[in-house]
Every structure is written in C-alpha cells, then in structure tokens.
Length: 297
Image (cartoon, rainbow, N blue to C red; front, side, top):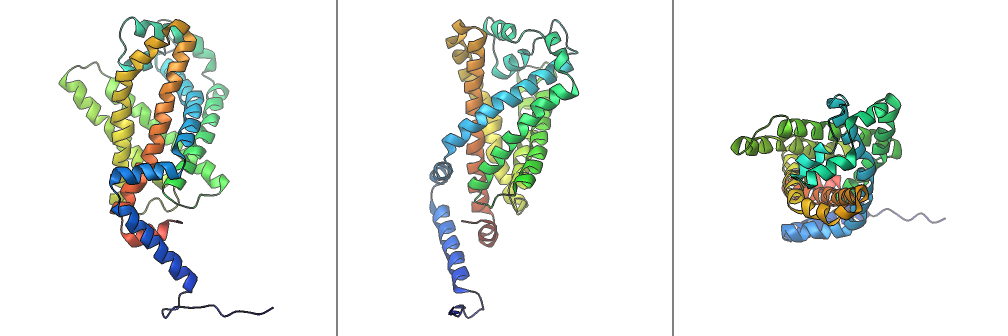
C-alpha cells in the first residue's frame, strides 16, 4: 500500500482542516449578512421545522397537559368544586359560556385523586423524557452542534423537562396567584417573563453541546423565548383560542380536546422557532472564533 504524504500548511495544520475552517467562516459571514428574519426562516427550513413542531406538539398534548391538570388538582386539594379546566380558562382569558363548557369537559379535581400516586405521576413524567429528547435534537440541529449520546441526551433532557415544569409553575404562581386587574396585572405579566427568560437562556446549556459558551450571547438568545413563548403565544392564544373553542363547541369534550391539540401545535412550532431564532441571535453576537469552533457545519 502506498502511503501518501499528508499535506500541511505553513502553520502545521492539515490542508483539509484549514479548508473546513475557512468554509465555516465563509458560511458564518454569509449567514450574518442575511436579514435576521431571512436567516431565521432559512434555519427553520433547514431543520424541517414543520415536522419537528408537529412531533413535539403531540408529545406536549400527551405529557404536559395531564401533568398540569394533576398538579392543579393537587394544589386545590382534589376538591369537588374545583375544575382543572380553570387552568386553561385563565390562560386563554375565557368567559361565560365558554369557560363553563371547558370546566365541564375536565370535570372536577376529586376524580383525579387516584392518579396522585408515585406510579400515576411517574407514568406521565416518563412520557416527558422522549419529548425532551426530541427538543434536544431540535436544538442540536438548529444550533448546528454534534448531538450528545443517547444516554447523555436522556439525562440532560430529563433535567430540562424538570426545569420546564418548574418554570411554568413559577410563572403560573406569579401571574395568577393573586387576583389583580389593570396595571398590577400587567406588571405581574412582565415579572412572569423572568422565569421564561431564565428557562430559555439555560436551555442551550442543558441540551446543546458546548451550549454554555458566551454568557451574554446566551442571554440574548433567551430573549427569543421571551418574545415567542412568553408574549406571542400567550397573547395570541387569548385572541384565537376562544374562537377556536367556539368552532369546536358542538363536539363536546372531543371538541375541547381538538382545540387544545391545535394549541399544542402552536406551542410546539413556537419552540422550534425559538430554537432557530436563539441560534441565529447567538451566532450574530458571539465571537466568530467561538461560533466556528463550536459548530459542526
């Protein structure tokens, strides 16, 4: 077998490595020259964002909603006069008669007492692990990073899912723990964005290889989650969901489930958009050397 000499640059680097680095720098500069919205949409299409969002939305529907319902019922002491539907009537700003129909669809909290067991809650938490693994894959693709091994991805995904549950519980407590209206309610909404920002700023740290590099760019990337997951989706839900629920009203509880599934679709798509927007923001604000050294493409 003939051994061909390895071509080296004057600095001692293999020619192939030098060319790959130059190609990465070139792609980074091209990406930075694009308008932010164009770069965002391009990244979304590159990772097949529509399919990814549909996958996450299904997992949200079967995991997060049951945990929210069981958690609310526990906080209410599984009372006969408390309906888990209250979570969603507050979230979507529903009024009579839609609010009554949503509560009727969920029944009362007392019926969920049997599910408040270690096995009952754990069964839903276990379903959250595949969802977290899916989100980790989305972020790895959007941030152009090598994925962790399966075991590491599951462990980090579990930590991410736990952080997600804590963040929505804290936000729910801030925004709806007290009965305020007008300016105090608006101020609580703004304060409730803080756990959202912390959650999305820490998400790359947990799910992305070398995701903790560049504290300031990470903080800016977290703002993408604030805008999309903290402002656009909640406010959009209040505008669209009542009409959506009204259209499905004739189908009874199945109609409520379909409306919630569509809402989960919006949330899942929002998460994919957050991953793409956060990646673009990080790339544009982190040093070029750090970006090129972290990414695989």
